[in-house]
Amino acid sequence: MPTNTPDQHPEPSAASGPFSRRRLFALGAGVAAAGALSAYARPRTTPPGTAAAAPSGDLPKLSQWYHAYGEEGTKDAVERYAKGYTKAAVEVTWSSDYDNALPPALLTDTGPDVFEWGNGPSIDMIRSGQVVDLTDLFTDELKADFNKAVLDRVTYDGKIWAVPQLVDMILLVYRKSMLDKAGVKPPTNLDEMVAAAKALTSGDVKGLFVGNDGGATEMGGPLLYSAGETFLTADGKLGFGDKSAEAFGKLHQMYADGSLLEGQDKDWWSEEAFTSGACAMQWTGLWTFPAISKALGDDWGVAAWPSAGDGGAPVTIFGAFSSCVSAKAKDVALAKDFVKYLWIDNTDAQVEFATAFGFHVPSRASLVPKAKTLQSGAGKEAADLLASSGKPQSAMLWSGKAGTAFNDMMTKIVKDGADPKAGLAELKPIVEAEASAAMTGATAGTTAATTAGTGG
Image (cartoon, rainbow, N blue to C red; front, side):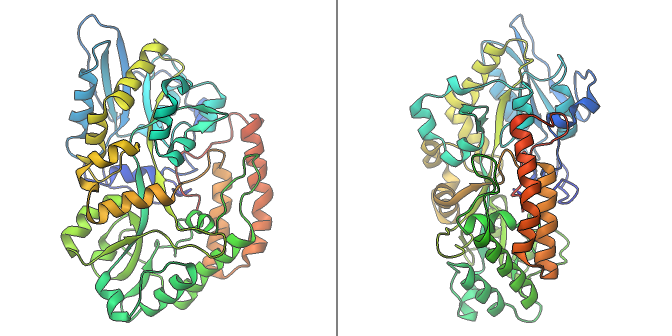
């Protein structure tokens, strides 16, 4: 989701529990892919902060890398999945410094054969030939089974470059009793959201929490999507204009009204502000649902971010860790077969991986009914909203420079009341120059494509 870097949204430690998959939404445009690799081109067999499960026997060997998920049992599970593959001995490497360790490793012959990356490989990884085209793993029937928006996010130039492993999402949660007391219904459009947030603000309670910066670095993406627009057009032009500008102005209106919660110990990715009663509504992640249920029982509901008006639509935001094959794999065909075994054929493992070690959604529609956590209550509502209103965190061609410029513009709009249309006029040439460079490879080695982040 956002164009934010990990430093902007500090992540709990790898051992701290269910937030590790939320890190997908904090990688942001500041995380370099191939663009910054040349500075780190040195051999590395095992990245720092890792634990590797060594293979045995005379089978050919494959290496598979994961970031260090915080959910208890995840590491044991992926090692169990690897052992179930009978055509190779798969060494699983588990890294707590994954984002720094993986990019340089992809330049060497000692890096992973198979690896995960947020929302699939970056445009730089693709253009520089670091990843393998996986289109031939997908039948037409299989393509139709994957969430279309998720599969589209790992597709470039008509080719599929990764297999989505699971989906995380961000959406709106609201406190039923607070809304009832104020005579407010869950908002269905942005004007209703502005009015609801103001009506629900009283004393120490604020109507809405969208981040400690008033949503400047979180809500740009959801707002432009809610206006019926998008980050970039297919030909790399800025995909949003006056409708989004009006929506951005509504966020400033809520900030000026004093309706937005700020200054929390933990940001939007934690449920603590919501469960403590500091806000009546919050933009947050699916991963918070178990803690919210434990704290509030049935006194809460879920919704998409409301439509911005004519031509707009409700929005939820998704991110999907996805499995890629390195072009430097020792045996590319075998590595592709392993990815197929694990993330296409082994559906029981896919359901388990998404639901047994946290609260997530399988990336394939046929597997959602097998996920017990998604068959009732808020979990089912969230899965249905993802299918009907899910939008990607950002576009593949949305670069770090574009994301920084966008965030700067949003901060000026939200906090200072700057003119959104004037901001868009300044943003447009920056974004389009970056997208053009990414598409042509003109700045190969310097442009870092976003792998995660809402772009707002």
